[in-house]
Image (cartoon, rainbow, N blue to C red; front, top):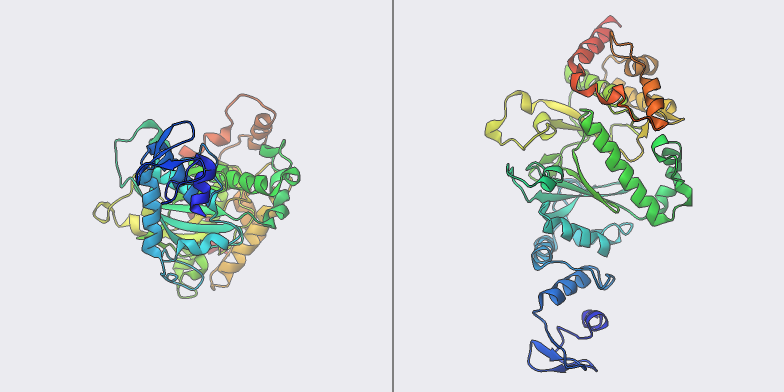
Length: 422
């Protein structure tokens, strides 16, 4: 079958010992064509095109090419994981799973995805892609090793598309009908006022959803919220900072084993509410699907901006636990018609989880008041600024400038004071 692809695209079966109908073999590596043209199986252009065809199972175009370096790195990664079992839990946590096994999961690891991962290797974003660390309704998350272990001297492009020495999470969205039910998160968002989700075909819907998660993560990251750093997005693939250590992912909030009633639960609860508040004001976003399933708990060094810190470079504070918000595909701008409803739903879910840990919490109504109230002592009109921007005004909105001076510690103290008064 592989020989058939090569003859169809190149006019010659490079790896066959018998010549095709139009070509004559001169020796084991060289062929002469019907017009006396000469081709060698070692020709770089032909080799790179053949690599792409092999990765894409014959579905690539004639202009598609993959270098030997990227192709070989990809194949070594597959061979190294062949026959290995799932990782730390039966749900698929951990990196030790055969990547080939994911090919049938909603079409996630299809030929086009393999090509894009090979391109990421070729551009120096990742060294290799390991196995699945998480599977959800929308997609799969793979662990990939960083190709740049804290290199300080980087070109301009790689300063933007770089993991800062951290490993990389590769999130591949499945091409499934699940996204047809997500139109309410797109059509009502003022950023997508010209995009009608329901009129797109299934492939376009998945790509648009992937792009939306990347944009939301980028806005949240720039707003100073603890989220995985978004690195790069292409088609239905999102590259972001991997949150974990040595290939093992950080736990979800629901997986943390802390004694009920412990003050550590109160700290995590306050961090979660403060993060939701900062997301609302500094990124102008409402998560829309927040729960104990898409809040991770990580040491601070994993989410801090800048280059990855080695164990010897970390301080005591760097190992303190920090909640991190993930899964931003459904997050909407606060100008969305249903933003308030989505926020209230998030707060009810989060409040219920923490209340089940036997700690004092605010009511969902009081939590909403805490989240949406303006900055103490600040009377700027955020909504007015937002509306001017939505209408195309070329002035910088206040909310884009407040992240640098946002007083997160002040919010933590105010929230703790409210809890003590209950």
